[in-house]
Picture 1 (cartoon, one colour):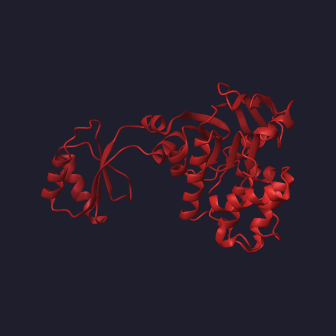
Picture 2: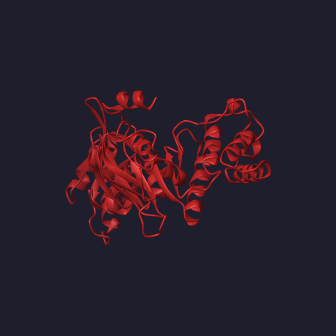
Length: 328
């Protein structure tokens, strides 16, 4: 893959199942050596998109190129430069974790000694040592996921596609995966990541494409997306619901205060870095109302997601059932 060539480029990529449109005219560009995250709620079209890029399903219309190869006309060439880890572990349950990795190495053309060396390296890299000799069917979901991710790197690809890579992982395992992703990118691997975890996209992605109902609704760096939905604010959190009215009365005399129904948090727009927090703190102290917290907040990716889609990332949308049925 030439350095100047995009790792992935789609033009009007569309997938329909009868009357249901899973992916709707998606234009996507993933530059080589970067991490691009496709972020969206359930049923948004994330998995359908990566399945088309991996040549597992054909587009209804539009085009897609991976490593300069057309996913329809040059499917074999695409498979030679891509590695996909899907949402469910593709492992043999009656083999151990180590045996699975050795088997994958043999299937990818390595001799027994070479496959064993690669397997042992991946066992260390993905922190699999403690359960490497246990059968896959006896492992937890998070442990199986780590083995599955390791198997995708038996041969280091030019493009690694991770579809919901840390779903079901505990915090420690998630950090292992995140660090491995950073190491791979440093080694020149391009990464396309689909996720519902805003923290994950924020931590790893150079560029985020936010999709909803199969369409792109926003794209940019995490910082750019956050900047689209508003300025920083000061949050004052009452210690209990009874204190909200008192705080609101005290603060609204000097500031533009908003509070959501049922919330203990009062928010004050703070467009300037130089906003004097002490002024707000002084009003709070004078009110005599106890608080849990007073803090300057900047927009988060959660805020951007909610503002741009109207849904939290794990909310279900009407297309979920149809998408899940097709994926199955």
